[in-house]
Length: 224
Image (cartoon, rainbow, N blue to C red; front, side):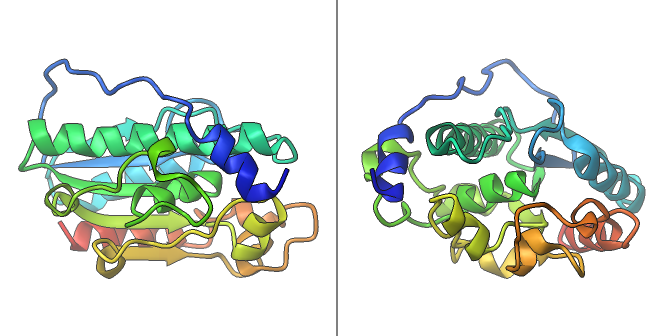
């Protein structure tokens, strides 16, 4: 089956709906998708990013939401990979819509690392990727909801070369989000630089030591 066909067949999986329970409304909330094979939560880079945002937020309260998806590591199983990503996209989009409806004054910061950057990137898309039936994926976020998003910060987003290798469609940040998106690729990170050769380089795991986590947090806080 063609790669796009695999995605078309598998993108219909439903993730759990966002909770309808009342939530406190912080000044800002970081919604972060962790990287491949990290334990449930925001992950290592996500936690460093969240901590840095809180330090730089100047006393403003900062909530957190970990995107609920498997972050699976079996990229050669294209069906599982597609299902993992679409579950994350659905969950992240539902969280943005939930916060926009229930905490309209909370400024949202979307983030993602590695596979999580794929999830967050697709969450911002203005249209369904080519070759994927529109009725199998979440509808793009509306302009009204997008207005609640202050910033999008991506760390180590897999390159087009990487995505093509595993039959995934290209990531296109939607025009509602492009002016407020920072896409960070660490020097020597072969996942995002486009020279992937089978194993992630050491640089792919060094976003904290390189200073890019703090740079991303500064960008996000500057947009609050």
